[in-house]
Length: 258
Image 1 (cartoon, rainbow, N blue to C red):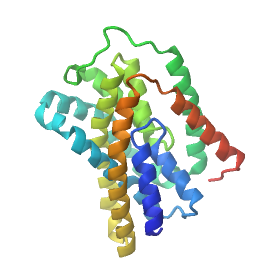
Image 2: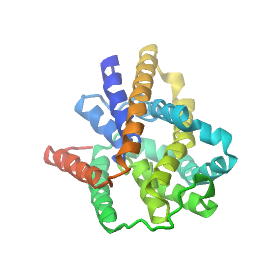
Image 3: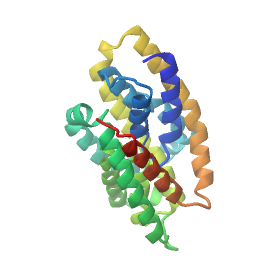
């Protein structure tokens, strides 16, 4: 991987992290298109680069966690299921799932279909909860369970949490913001665990690539978050479901392999 690759992947991460299209899946497919071998460093890069996008959430929404302890409490509760599952399945995920293009493609396809079906059937209730600080702790925990499904590349962490939150009776804007906040401990823990286990083997050039990818993903994610918050005011996620299906079909047509 060179610095050009790091910039491209940083852009991909920044755009896709908070949209319901799977950033990890897009990083894996983008790496394949760029001809980047799925080495241990590349797998770590695809995890750690997400810290850049997460930093954008800290800049835009971090004050909510520091000022309102009730919101922080709900984020911590929602983080627990993913933390447990991620820790237990870490080796399995990194060895067999990360870098597996076929898993990504089928996850994108199936997830796209489910996203469209959900949006066609979902009707937001008038009493849908809109205060982050008043989300029931049980609801927060269940949102975390939905998020845990995204340990499979291509599923999309944001899609899983947003759909889960909508099913559990939250307003769209509320669950989108909660998904942003939940990304902070989730991705920080995932990246931190991986860097702790792998960073000692990175070369100077690899660390430089990681730094470039981090900065680019941070800058791009700032705009991506603002776009999504504007988009959801008057739109649903059906276009993203269609996009997922189109991408999956293209890669299946091209004969994507592991």
